[in-house]
Amino acid sequence: MPIVKKGFVDVLVGLQWGDEGKGKNIDELLSHGTYSAVARFQGGANAGHTIKKDDITFIGHIIPSGCLHQNIELYIGNEVVVDIVSLAKEITELKVLGFNVTSRLYISNRAKLVSFMHPFLDKAEESYRNKNTKSIGTTSRGIGPAYSDSRSRRGLLMGDILSDDFSDKVKNLKEFHMNLLDMYKEKYNFEYSLKEIEEAEKKWLDALNIIRELKIYDLSFLINKRLSEGKNILAEGAQGIMLDIDFGDYPNVTSSNTLPANVCLGLGVSHRYLRNVYGVIKAYTTKVGGGSFPSRIKDENLEKLFQKAGNEFGATTGRPRMCGWLDLFALRYAIRLSGVNKIFINKADICLSEKVKVVTGYKNSNKIFEEFPLRLDDVTNVITDEIPGWGDKNFGVNSKEKASKELSSYLEYIKNKLLDLEVSIVSVGTGPAREHTFNWDK
Ligand code: IMP
Image 1 (cartoon, rainbow, N blue to C red):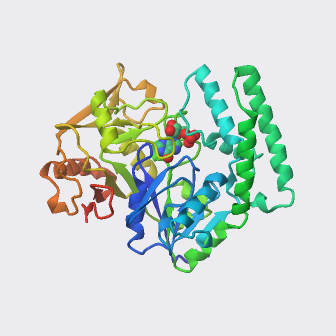
Image 2 (image 1 turned 120 degrees about the vertical axis):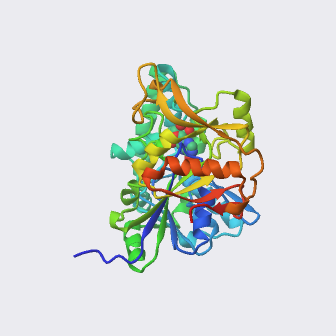
Image 3 (image 1 turned 45 degrees about the vertical axis):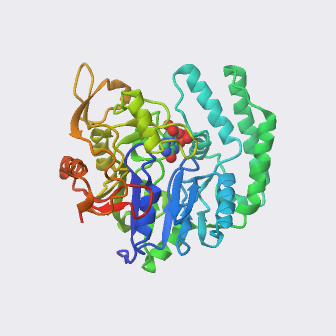
């Protein structure tokens, strides 16, 4: 029997290395009234979404971005690794701001629990990597260890919280993790503090009291019910396509699949419901953490100007982000993988040099790369185009007609370079406020 499709699922993902400003575009999409829910389908509290509404600014790590829209349901899917301390903190902070999310937050009973031991293991693994090769520069939120436990089938699920033997499960897993930490200590001189572990455990157990009261559900069932009622859902990607565990610059990636293909697995919904895939980019590129970054701006002073103008400091870790030119070579790869059909370009007002470079290809002494390489370390040089810059003329521009001719040429250039991929540029951001935006292709 064919599925009777009533509602649909749209997806929004970042097409670069994360931090594309997705929160603002989600807010824009929600303002059209099309969706009844926003769903996180991967990642954990490694994300940092800055969400603004009127004069309220909220930085969320784990709660879905629709939290400041009172009528929007919030879903946390089964492929998310849930940091319950962050979640409890965000729920409390939102309550103080006047947003009670508990009545509209639904968490999959199959979502993975981040244990209080995972951040310690994350640091231990980073210190081990640092000794052998190079660290990844993780967010220290325990993401890798939580996904490892899930794949090794020893991890805890959200649904376990409600079971009678939950305390035993927590105790057994802690014992296993302590053995691992001791191994890192004995073999690789990793130092950890028992006091810090005790404190983390206490915070985690305290958070459980709030989490137990939430709706921990068969989320796939609920989502399919909502779709059959004709409701539409926006699936929200965290991180970015270039950090995908399978298709990014391994091992300098996160531990989940960030591709829209993971929406089906991460929410328990059939691909038949998928409709638009929105991809978000900045007019330039940023990256945090380890690994090569081919389009990085070589002039240190100019990079600092981008960091300052774009507030390019991690919302989760506070680390300064490396800044680079728009990397069309990586972007074409990301679009091909993710099937994006509509693009948002953010921070298009930021232009700090007379000429703007755009990376169109990668090369090394042997070859020009035809496709995105297995390892970015193999890239020693980039091929670039140069385009006239637009200075500070475009801040806050809210219509296509008001955009300066240089910015318009830049956007036209990007559009032409992506023509064969059949994507349209839906809107262009020129500042942090909702009204600092203009439509381009429609
Ligand atoms: P993890 O996800 O904490 O394990 O970190 C792995 C890599 O992904 C590191 O290079 C992080 O800097 C990067 N990363 C993880 N989450 C984000 C994000 O939300 N924005 C940007 N980079 C991220």
